[in-house]
Length: 194
Image (cartoon, rainbow, N blue to C red; front, side, top):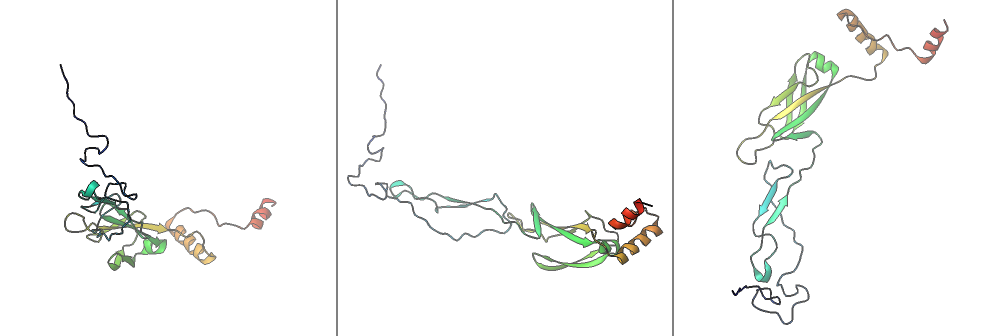
């Protein structure tokens, strides 16, 4: 039997017309590549990897067709004080060991301004304080995540003689074994020959 097939015209590609003298810029398509700058409202709470769709802001269709959509990929810059865990913010609060041992009232900056936090006596590294509703706004819905304050106890690496003696006395009263006092280089050599 006979077989009939339909195919677009190889010259006009199915457009139904051939442009005799095409424009050198657009080659007869009726559109050209240009660069535009748009101001985009970014909703609060978006995170890296979020995509925003702007309908009608994409490339114009061929031969005057409707414009497509513009997709904006979001990349959130890192903050110097906070990291993000979903809608929660995490803040590492470095405390001197004296404040961790004795307790303290600490003031630190949040996204909403200064916040006071009472650190109880005996606070250890890793303890977490949760400030509800002080994190990142939820993108879809109301409310905010939490601000999680994680304690890191800083132990001094250099002590003067008075501080070292005070710590040795505390250790002795508590019955804790500590390393012997660090003697200087010449004292160690001298004791090696006696």
